[in-house]
Length: 416
Image 1 (spheres, one colour):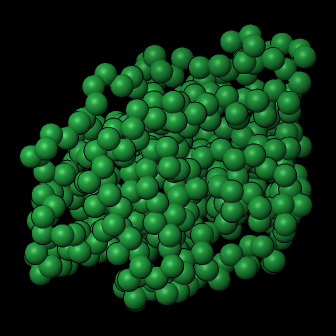
Image 2 (cartoon, helix red, strand yellow):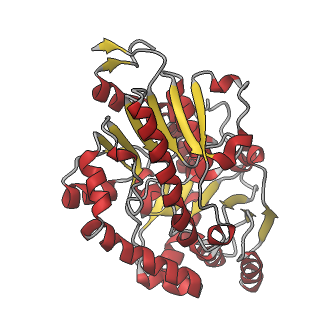
């Protein structure tokens, strides 16, 4: 294999990319930053994030930022409930990115294009049309939300999930642009096993799995062992909206035997907060709602807790689940979506998703099991350091760079 020629002509398109924001923006930034440790890259993101980047920041040593403005930045459209309003305008940003990349290609400045963030197959963008190797990260179809759980959701959320369920069929059977993007892609990284199998079945495309988020590796210096008289500290964090499943968690805690001494902490804000506070009071659940917690304070909340519970119906490999494991807090979660695929018995407990009554009862049983079996909970903690290492940002970056090496016929990891 030949050596990579510098300056790099690798272009990464990442609509969501910011070191100053959380959620999807931090996912885009962390993957790109870890890639840049091995190879210089050119990164295209939206103009609105320009202020988040200080060009004198040493973290940008191998990153050249390019900001592309969306010509259809209509505020009222962006305010429409996600994902409807967002995708109405996002396509126009992708068109502008394609226009920029096409100009660079004609100047002979591009060797490879890698798309990261916003990997939904319902909007494949246009960059795949350029005649260079194209690598697609986080490719996924919308997850199917079981209709038997729709009674948990508002009318608006029901409509959105209904549209998402229907859009799976459109993408897999109708969406020609998605199929063309798959045909052109040199390599595709699926965001989960279900997506990988669907792509093989409908697009005849072999994919690797690379989760859209990663962990921060830490050393286990001290185990958070619960003393006999200490309350069992249960933690939930996220947007307090109907599809995040907080109602299921509150109802599960209300089923615990009176003998269980617990503390339940809820971190986050959202339009369902007042409703969830009232539900907890109605069910006599001792819940402490602490509001929106600064990102830098979250590790402490995870590390002091004895378990973290995730019961969302609309998340992939959510940041929170890896933050929990990175801070050595065992997980109880639903056995679905990407997070259910990633978690196993080494670091947590999972609940089958069959119906509402069963999920509530099983969540309560899992909480009680961890409460009654402290030695088992400690063993989960001991397993986390190695488990998290295999899900780290560095491992994600090395997977992607492996695809770069094959596409370009160069050595990157060996020479880094």
